[in-house]
Length: 288
Length: 261
Image (cartoon, rainbow over all chains, first blue to last red; front, side):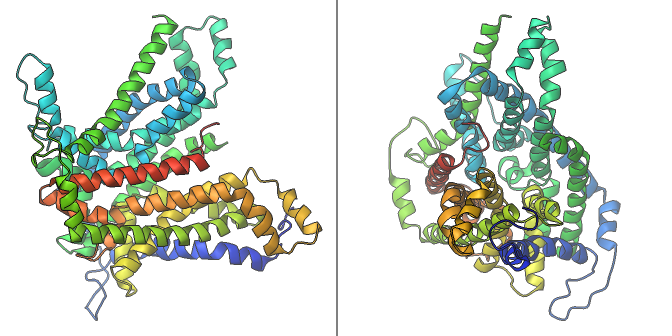
């Protein structure tokens, strides 16, 4: 069936079916990303006859002002923390779903776990603001349950940001780990057990290596958006919520220094692409 | 520790995670029916906030705009995505692997980067900000999902069926319409629902691309939250969660999220 199957078989048919989608992606994703590179290299936006020239100034700003690098590192660290927490919390959960629960119950529970992931993330972050605020539900609930007074004001702290982000991205790692774990043949585990392997040995030597691609995929899917997060730190972090993402947001909606914003975005893109490149050999193995 | 005990522990863990995932949403929903605007307890039932919401023209207009944009996005992304999936399924050609890889940037690159890049580019070409720009952006974000979902469904389709219809004298378009499309219909419906959900819930790209005072519901909510939140925002947020979860439950009936059946 090389060169086309029953339908069309012609080059024209192929192009007619394929080009609208890819032209759209080009116009809305690939050209803008290229334009962003261009705009990060100019002094002024070349609209409306403005004087402009090529410059590396916007990138120099990143390297000369320690604030930006510090904030990028702060965002990367936030990404690492959220990713690790999600992996530690989500993997056991995926394991239980994949190996300890069967039939319709598993289907229903699986759906319940990933349903929030497809609902509005902004609204879910907002719901945490209601729970975490001082005199909020968590505060009142704990004080009603505990015999002593506690003052939990997590709102506008880094903890609040981490909680909100873990809530947003946890379903990713559960989904990818679950898919990887499901592919592991139960007979393999039984065989290891019958040959005398202990639970920890089975976990370390068999289950973790085999589910590694799923864990890596989940980690990448979490880390990448968290490094670029701005809405979550803004809502849950208040004054401590200044991150690399919020600085980029400011350049576009408050300060209107678009060339600097473009340069900062492009540096973030470089970080993201580096992460994807490092992870891709393991992800390829996952597809194979 | 015995195996049975471990299994029980695991189920408790799963239960705790479900509580973690749903408790804040339920709290928010409950508070939208609570009389105190400062979320004070004891709980006193009221529908006051929903009444206020029904009179808030700004939010209602934004909601209507969000639904409209999501519907337009759904139609465009589903048609274009289905066509591309058919092409990727039927034809063997050089560069096919590259085309598949090109579906990942819209998914994998943080929306902050794509959103700001679109803003700069759309200004450069004179499209600027506003509803058309938002639709262009949403379709691009939804397309890869539609293609992935429809392609997954096509993988279960036997290409010899197309050939059989062809041999029996059906033309190319007739084969597509009478044989292929009915078979992949569940995939197309699921893809369309995904597209709707992506557009309806999209905040970041809409935020950068919409005109102030002319924005989508999530953007209006974000602005309101940053000003200090009100129970009306609670009420509308609760409605949004209900709508998007309902859409996804329907989508789940048509595609199984990659889980086994």
